[in-house]
Length: 312
Length: 312
Image (cartoon, rainbow over all chains, first blue to last red; front, side, top):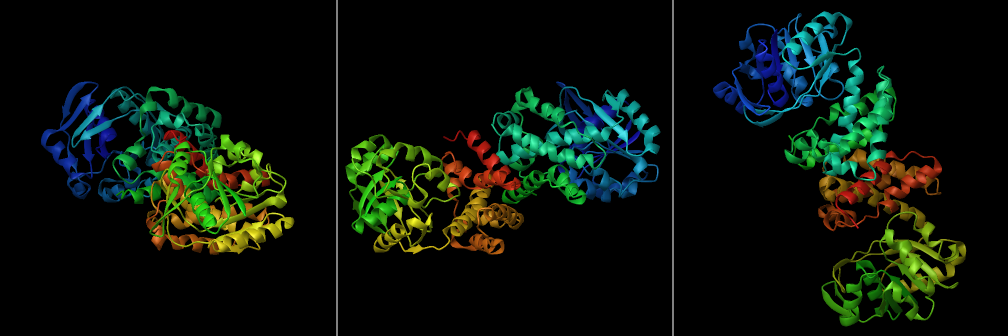
């Protein structure tokens, strides 16, 4: 399959490497010049479950997109959520009527952006439990196992989505065709909408958050807002199950982990993806006439904090 | 007047010193042994508008209260809000049927605690704009000018409250008998309920908070919750006026200041007074059936942060 991956960070590099090894025709597009330079010079270098692996893949800056010459068959979006729209505007030249777009980003509302670029029946949504870490330009660390759940956004996209599932299976990505990927996306967004925003604003890791007396009430209030808004989009979240799913992280190995938003905001002083998590629930809640004050206040606090740390 | 001041911190020391100089009979009660020892040994030492002043005042630990031998005529409460109840339980021996209690603490709901100890017509409530800083055991820095607004909580307390006003006037405390001290208390609580909680959770000073794009929306949402709850207590806050009153601090000299809750929580890792500010609005809101989600979430975040920093 001819695959263009937008965003050669940790996760984009993982998918690129695994799909390339399974003999797909993989091209990278990335906005970070040092990363592009390193991958062009030395290849994409991964520590893949302890083994050093180097693969040579074509990589382009968005401004060089015209050099690709042909339309993409499948585009996989692995940018930051808040860079998704700008990236797609830049890569319009490789999006044709037959191009499919797969979005595995955390959060809510990416389909609204992506439908500005492809038809609904050429859109595939999903989530992934794979992890990946970027250790420097052109260098990633890929540990452990994961999986992917995905589903065509409109019925007519079914046949191609099944082809993607086959290609992913051949690459060892453990894909599962989902009959209700929207549920999976909302359920995962609840994880990010609680752990990411709260750990970032409280400056703590997941286990420390879980050890506070307020954790349960905070999680349940936030999940309730997500559930009310999700219901307006045809997704009936099981709030108790989602709470239990998130709360088990408090005592799991991941408890020592600082969520990605914490890394962005507190460690690296970067703009966060809050507008695609709590912020999306707030915005959709306004549209549907549902009060989501916890999501609203958390979004406001994170945005205020972004300004205070000079996030870009 | 025979006055017992509970809490010989910055503000208690200011009132003690000024009332003592005006020939009132002032006794201190304080819970910090090092402070007691220092004041007993060297007196209460103040830098009073640049002049060094030392006054020798009797000071007792709460456990020594029986040594006072007689009931207090006026007790002025200058403990931390969250220590108010425990302090009054310890000083019960000096509270008689003729004892009046004046509370000038920031926040809401102190009258509910104090009515467990004195009758409503022996309770005086107020606010003060005086400032004070404690620089060490027995040492305070007292700069600038201020004023006091106070009013008897029940009609029968009027005559004695006027006596307090006279005593305060003679001491240079600039008292004003208020016809609606509840309004003044709620208005000042709005200042604390916005600046204190937000600066503490965002780890910034007043000016930095004010410079964020979210400040206006945050302030207005919080003030609106205070106003709704205040209305149930017969206080009609002018939300626009309160907002303007608070927002002017963003560009005033005080902008460089970190509020007292920030000092408690972030600098000194002490328990905060949030339960008497946003927490009181939340609690009263629950009683009156009013949703106060911003106050609720801020209270929960501050309490979680207290646990995370190991506040005592």
